Length: 306
Image 1 (tube, helix red, strand yellow):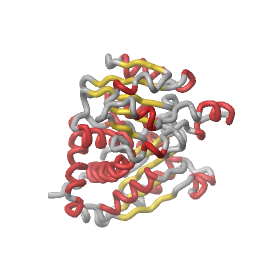
Image 2: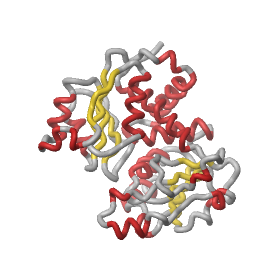
Image 3: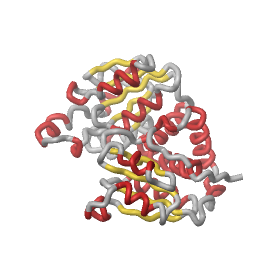
């Protein structure tokens, strides 16, 4: 039995197999429509989510399986003080696989240590978001045709952005990937990402404050929102939330083949006028997320479709 807690839980070869399977699902979904008949996915979401929870549910339903779970801590026995370890022991009696989101870093890891079914980390605090990373990699590979030889700009909240942390960790395993980290001083990547991931893997990176100066260099721009829920006070959030807004004027500085990704939800960091630009692929990214999670569920349940 395997779990997915970190994007590094799979080797590059295993990850490539998942991405290849997701591509097959995209082009022939009918073939996989009954692969999980009789199987149940539990979605244990201790904090709000739209895309990730519904994407998991859509993925399991597309595979012919069933879904059960809860969408907030208040609607579970966590409100009564039940521990994560006790919850997963109980969930293991009901379901075949579990996707868990939790505001505390490490909670899905704790769950995996006490679970008798595969556990998928669907986001833990400001730590990691491995299924979003698989979605991002699938989007890049499908639309760019490669995962190496790229210059990627990561913009916005790089301090608390778990999607950014996971993506950096995953992309460091591919050749000739350069990172341009675009953020205000207060929201720079944590030191452990800078030291233990980027420098430890001898990856080229630079940290800048201004988006406009680097737009012409980028193959990919990964925008993020400033996350209100991660701030300790309202004043700091208000000061930071409008620091970067991607608009048509900034897009005019970019290459014709540059792609804009965003894990969503968007607040105001990407102007709606950018939505019609063919380089804006964040809604395609959502669809790729369903294929990626379908492939992941099949892989962790060890279900092969001939």
